[in-house]
Amino acid sequence: MRLFLAIRLTPELKGALIDVQNVWYDMGVRGRFTPEENLHLTLAFIGEYPDPEAVLDALKAISFAPIPLTPDGVGAFGDLWWAGVSGGPALTGAARRVRRALAEAGIPFDRKRFSPHITLLRRASVSSPPPVAAAPVSMSADTITLFRSDRGKNGMLYTELGSIRATQSGDS
Ligand code: ATP
Ligand code: MG
Image 1 (tube, rainbow, N blue to C red):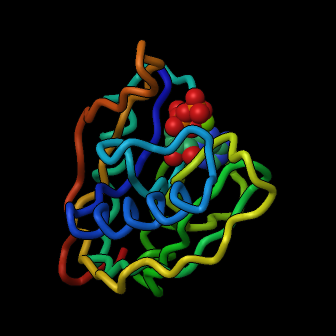
Image 2: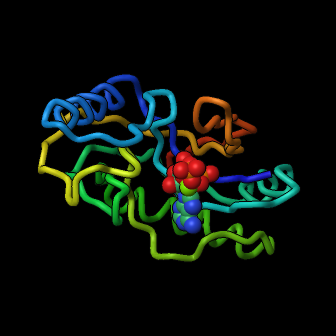
Image 3: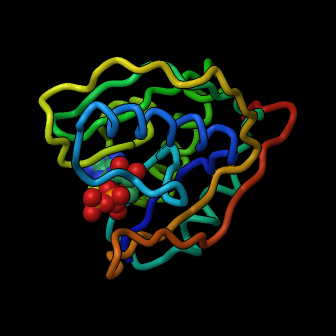
C-alpha cells in the first residue's frame, strides 16, 4: 500500500485555502483542484510499503511539541501549485524526528529536503500561480497521522491508519 505521514488541517485553515483556489478559478485558472477533504501537510512520503504497523511502531519512539501552522504564500513545482505553510522550529523539528525514526526502523521514505506545502492544484493551466494571500488563519497541530493513499474513481482517497500525539516537552 501507498503510505504517507501528514498533518490534518482544521476546517478554518482549509477554508482559507479553498478561498485561494476560488480566487485562482475566478481568474480563469483551470486544473485539478484538491478537494477540501484531501488538503493536508505531508511530513514524510513513504510510498509503497506493506507494513503500516511497523510505521506506527517506529513513530512511538518520538515526541514532538504542538505545531503552530499558518499560511505563508503560494508557489509551484512545475504545474503543481501549493500554499506554503510556516510552522517554525516545531514543524521542522517534528519532520526531522519523524524522518529519523523511519530511517532508524529501516522504513524507506522520500529523502528530498522538507519543504512544507499544501497542494492546492495539479496540472495548472497557467504557467505560474498568481500571488494570492490566504487569510491569516492559524492552527495548532497536535497529531501526526499515517495515511494510505488510493486512487479512487473520483480522485485520490486518503484513509487514516493511525496517529501519534504531541507531548508538551517535545524533546527526544
Ligand atoms: P497523485 O500523485 O495521483 O496526483 P497525490 O499526490 O495526492 O495524488 P500521493 O502521490 O499518494 O497522492 O501522495 C500523497 C502525499 O504525499 C501528497 O501530499 C503528495 O504531495 C506527497 N508526495 C507524493 N510523492 C512524494 C514524494 N516523492 N516526495 C514527497 N512527497 C510526496
Ligand atoms: Mg502524487
